[in-house]
Image (tube, rainbow, N blue to C red; front, top):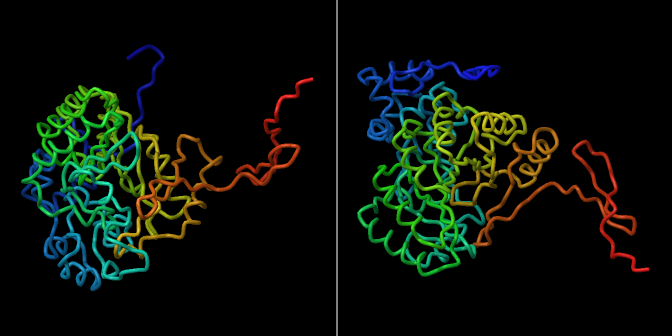
Length: 400
């Protein structure tokens, strides 16, 4: 250690394992109780986690006592987004509390069967901006590459619930080639966001195949990966994956975080591995009623994200997918949260609050109005404390 440099404090209570993984004592206790046959090496293997996803009423009932409304929703799955959660992530909802924020996000309720005004299966009209299957070209210089329809865990408010978990992977190679050809022919495209589903559920080999083809297109300047794996499947972030990803810089990663309870030792270790591989990390959080719609909750989340080297990037208003009314807050709630962060904590911790406009309008920023007015003496402003100030706004120069 360099002279004068203090060792980094451990912020979490963890068990350090020989393969370099970390595990919370509570996670280990959960594994011993519900998966007593699983070896430590198996629990920390992302393939094992995917093979043992919890997908049925019977599997979930072993872990938590379901409410009648949850049972009814789980049994009425026809045409709906299926339920799936990794054993690791299930350890975060196993406290028995029906109000557990992770449980609300993962376990269906009968409220999903209520179709509200303005809700739609494709509220953002992504399909109309899809020149070839699996590629959304909405903005002039960037595209969304939907690489897979598979996630390790399915969020109940998923914008793409209409297309994920449909088992269309056999046509993936054909779709990818058509999408790549479209990007090659459109030289205005400089930014490719690889999302899905979750691209980190694919093998290292498949992901590298796609990254290598995208990054060798001359006019593509940088690539992003959209994922929730570090949160729901942190075992996926392996040294081998990080070694592969760092070959394709500039590479950025957007990670979907929801609640401070997700910021476990395992998640922190996964994010720090990615950051050490030179990958800038940003968070994308959906504002959800009864989950993270309090200033105190959001402040705890964004502070925790910065500690694990993730920049809070977007706070999204929940998209009006069918059956999402119980998740959506008034827009003023999001403005209130931004007002409660801006000035009250570091600017690095304040995400941009946006509404992805229904009908394909794209992301529209929404923020508190700090401009009170404008007159011949300049612009009148208010700050986070409610104080008022005047700035001498630029005037045409006086020429003699």
